Image 1: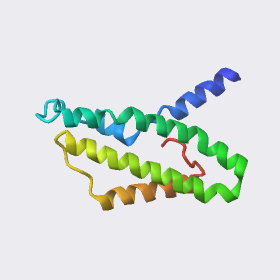
Image 2 (image 1 turned 180 degrees about the vertical axis):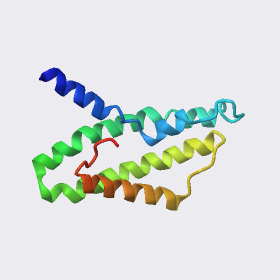
Image 3 (image 1 turned 90 degrees about the vertical axis):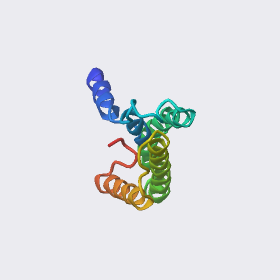
Length: 128
């Protein structure tokens, strides 16, 4: 039974790649901007955002269980802020490495849709 729980947790967290990590993985390494110091610096943001996403995936459900309904909106707001930060940095990674920056309205839409999905499914902070 314990092995099954560990396996389920592992599968649940397998999709924990941040938007910044996804942007780095989708970069064109043949582009002339890829080896530049600016691009290299931008690519170094991905591990930090991976750690933040994993931490909030583990912490948000616990905070909600301990705090109940009064902490729902603060947890949602923090998760939306961290998601927006990750998406803005992912956009910067793309722009710094020869791609196109994601328009701010698209970033805002993705954050709001993600928060709505999390709220609707009861998965605040759990990786999607």
